[in-house]
Amino acid sequence: MPFFPNKNKIRILNYIPLLILFFISLNGNSIIDFNYFSINVHYILVYYWVLRNPKLLGYGFIFLSGVISDVIFGTPMGVTALSLLVVASVAAYVRVVTVRISLINDWISFLPALLLANFFYFIALYFSNLPIDYIYLIKNSFFTFTFYPILWSIFSLFLNFIKL
Amino acid sequence: METSRDDLGIAIRSAFLKKGTQQKFSLFALIIISVIFIFAESIKVKPIDYVRSAIRDLIYHSSQVISYPAKTIKGISNFVSNHIQVYDSYKVLKKENEYLKNNLLKNDYLEVENEQLKKLVDERLKTYENLVTARIMIDKQSLYLNSFIINAGSNKKIKKGMAVLDRKNFIGRIVDVNFFSSRVLLITDLNSKIPVIIEPSGDQAILSGHGNDPLSLDYLPKDQKIQDGNSVYTSGKEGLFSPGIPIGAVFNKSNQFYVSSFSDLNQVLFVNINIGETENK
Image (cartoon, rainbow over all chains, first blue to last red):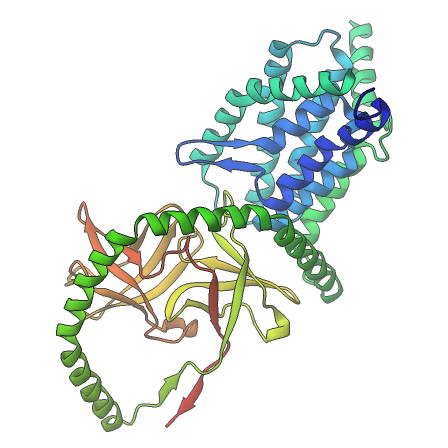
């Protein structure tokens, strides 16, 4: 007899992406920043789950976590929410037009999502009179794109596990 | 051709406008709400400010609870590393103690002389009696802001622009006040420009923050006589802060003067906010 009844196990695990989403926004870890590189985990998380299983990550929650990130980091309320929704929009569009699931497809389509999101982020901050560190923004985008396959693999393993 | 355009239209409508399975909002509606939020930031109306303050307070306090385990782990790691370095620290402190003992008498003499001279010129002595102490709730640094969130707001009479001190050293100013919390913009932030005076040369300059890079001294006079180790204080120009609050020490690197802060901003747990000066004759 299994330790967990299957239905309950899946019901609890279904909330994990949502919990991670709110944990990273409230804990201020949406951008993991090391000395030489930084990764925007928020973008990858939203993109992957909206693309692969949107049932587990509601758009309303994505918006809310963006607002939380804005408050924590001191950026104008709505800026991160807007860029996350742009990422989610590209993911939703890619989901509609693609049939085959593969890392390469996901990875390539993540690039326009990232560029569009950063473009909106940049525009919103430009009108908010906040100084923009362009080098940091480019570095962050580059490493977020580079590290996408690693997080893709982790999330895919998890997704397969909850599908079992 | 027309068919492919139709397909694109259908795909876009399906992705943006339709509420997906178990989705309560459409992406398009939420994007519009985000844009409204961004524009609402620039509207300074009291009821909106109250709502904004309440939201911020709620999020800051939730964040404090969520980040408690991470803070505890960081605290334990600092505690362990401090213990490992205890012998090295002891040697440094012993040397420092000897040096300070040698200078003690000299300092006493200068202090007495300073007091006498102040009385002589009838200067109104300013004291920092109106200090409010606050704890740092969140110290997450963002891409664009080097700031702290502290657990004191308008409930403790804190206002925008007030100087924030670590013990007696200047580390930043208040830029955002809520009911029970405030945001402190640190001197290292890109937005931070503080009028300062360098002693003993008496040269005045603007101290600029550069994020992770050292603080720089801008707009120095051409005939400046600054040397390594000179102290930097707030000048009190423009009436922003009280004059004479210590900030850091000057160091020279490739013919450009930089300042290393007297306070280690990564180690600050409590801060003092100067909410107003009392003047004694």
